[in-house]
Length: 70
Image 1 (cartoon, helix red, strand yellow):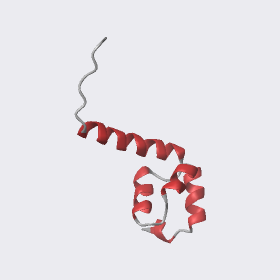
Image 2 (cartoon, helix red, strand yellow):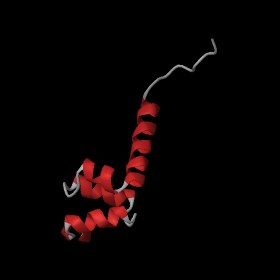
Image 3 (cartoon, one colour):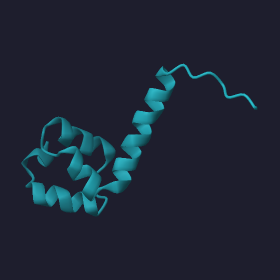
Image 4 (cartoon, one colour):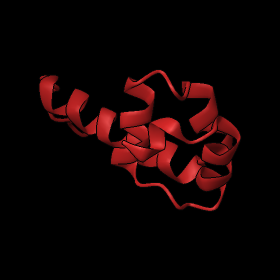
């Protein structure tokens, strides 16, 4: 909850230093304290982790037939 009272400039610095967790970034995004662009530009590692989570969830929901050799 302290993070909600932290100035945005400080949050961006924390993201650049990899001092925030994925859960904290998701919380701040859900609280409208951060935008997706903030994460993409200041925390590429967290952005990659979030994209991986999203793609895994999408892949698990999709029914993709196995590829066959031609």
